[in-house]
Image 1 (spheres, rainbow, N blue to C red):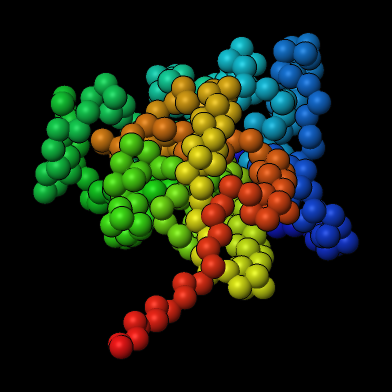
Image 2 (cartoon, rainbow, N blue to C red):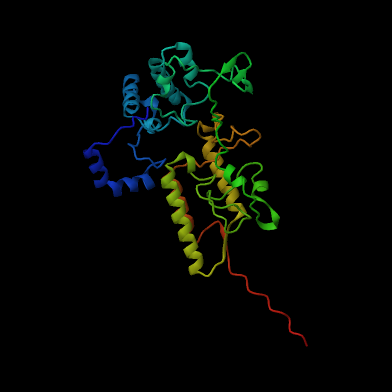
Amino acid sequence: PARNAPLTAEERQAFRDNYPEIRRKARQDMRNGIVQPLPDRGALDDPDAVRRDKYLARWTSGGLTFMGVYNNLTLDRHANDTAADFIRERIAEIVEDPKVARLLQPDSHPVGSKRICVDTDYYATFNRPNVELVDLRADPIACILPDGLRTANQHYKLDALVFATGFDAMTGSVAKIEIVGRGEMTLNRKWAEGPRTYLGLMSAGFPNLFVITGPGSPSVLSNMIVSIEQHVDWITDCIGYLRDNQLASIEANREAEDRWVAHVNEVAQGTLYPQANSWYMGANIPGKPQIFMPYIGGVGVYRQICDDVAAKGYEGFVLGAPEQPKQAAASS
C-alpha cells in the first residue's frame, strides 16, 4: 500500500532538521537512493514469526521500501518466495472473490523483478460490482469494436477504453531521434542488438553525446531525482575539465564500453530480475532485444565508480584537442 497521508508537524520538522543527512544517505548509502533502514540479514535467517512481523510492519508503513526488508529478496528465489507468500495472503484478505484474488496474486515472476504495485485501494477496487477482471493471458483480445472489445471467448461492452500498454523504456525516446556518430553510424544501428554505453553516460563512436540516466546506469531502479542530479553534476564537472584543459571532445573508449556492458550484464545475472518478462528487459516491445538495461550495482557504488573515473583523468574516455584550422598551401 502507498499509505499516502498528510505529514504531521513533527514529521515535517524532523525532515527539515535532518535534511542534509537524509540527502547524503540517499546519494551515498542507499542502494536505490531511497532512505530506509539497511537490512543486515537474509529472509531465511529469521524464524517464520519474526519474518512475518517484519513484512507486516513494512506493509503497514507502506511506500516503496517493502523489498528492502531483507538483503536477499532479489537474489535468492527461496527468500523471494517468503515475500511473495506474504503478499498473496494480503491480497486474499482484501479481495473477496477467491478466483479474482488468485489472478491478482504474483506467480509468473519473482516479486520485485517487475515494479511492485504500490497502491491506494487498487486491490479493493476489484470488490466493486461494476469491476470485472479478465485474464488476457487465458482469454486474449481479438479485436476492438465500436461499443467495446471482443476477446477470444466474450464480447465486452464499454463506455470508454483506456490504452495502458506500457512504454519503450530507457531507449525509446532516444531511438526516435536520428543521432549520427562517426562514420555515419546511427545510434539506432549501433543499439540494434541492445544498448551499449560506458557508465550509462556515453556510447563509443558518438563524441560529446551525453545520456542522462541511460541504460547501463542505476536509472529506473533508483530514486530518479538522486540519479539525475548525480549525472548532471558529473557531466557539468566533465565539461568544466574539458574547458580548463582546452579539450574539445570526449568519447567513450570502445574497450572500456565493452568491459562496462559485460559488468552490467554480470551483475544482473546474479539477481532474479532477468527471470521476469519486464520492461526492464524490453519484453513489452515486440522485437526489442531482451537485455536487462539498468545497472543494479547500487546508487552509492555507481557514484563511487563514476567519481573514480573522473579522478583518474576520465579513465576509459578518449579526450580530444581542438582541431587546428588547415593552412592553405602557399603558391610559388
